[in-house]
Image (cartoon, rainbow, N blue to C red; front, top):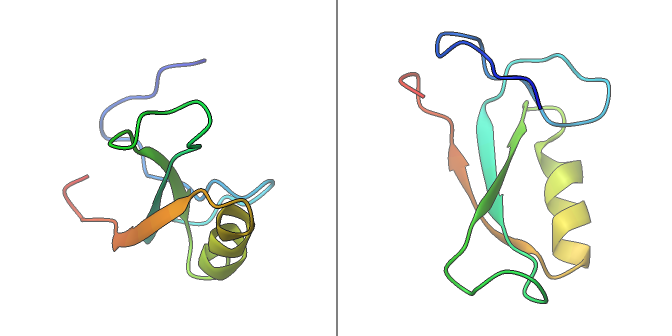
Amino acid sequence: MTATPDDAPLICSAKGCEGPAKHALLWNNPKIHTPDRRKTWLACDEHEVSLRRFLSARGFWKETQPVSADA
């Protein structure tokens, strides 16, 4: 995994998307993560729903939060 500079823009996690992230989808896989563990996928406005549906269908999605300008 390549490290990115702290000031690099946050980009959507959807495959092939380079849009700016506006949402943080917090999730975990209960088969391998402890209940308090949260992984994060970033989403632009266009992909937030589809990424959330993908995670929800597997029982992984926990919550969505806005990406702060300070992140």
